[in-house]
Length: 177
Image (cartoon, rainbow, N blue to C red; front, side, top):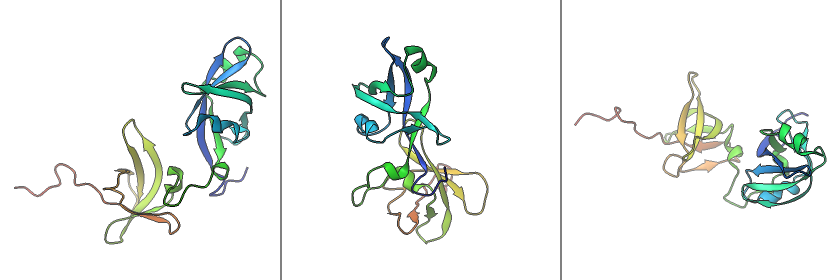
């Protein structure tokens, strides 16, 4: 599977294990609407191969419970526990005007207020609080993180390939009183 910007894989769910004794599977959804997993077609493994094809589903507290073409028994469902499920980016609906998917930030140039390129967004991470942009410096060296807040990233220009990055002043960087 050749990956382009619109077909890169987006993590949408993870198999949580079997449900009941009749071969149903519990799937934790990372989508705003868990039942949307049914509309995406086959859910893929990280390598692009088919991981799970839901044939029926019903909402559950963390996602969906349903039947899948690849699973006939509870043991088969349990054996797939932890499998991360993806879809190509182009299967997601188009975002509304002035909205975007976090994955669309990856690859954008991070520019300071003077227009100097600081680096490029390598990934979007969430360590339990807010989303953080991992920035790979233009000059090389270790990556650094920028909170994805209105203060730190006041402007995003996806079509033009850049965002405005305002690095917060860190303790110890201030002038002494």
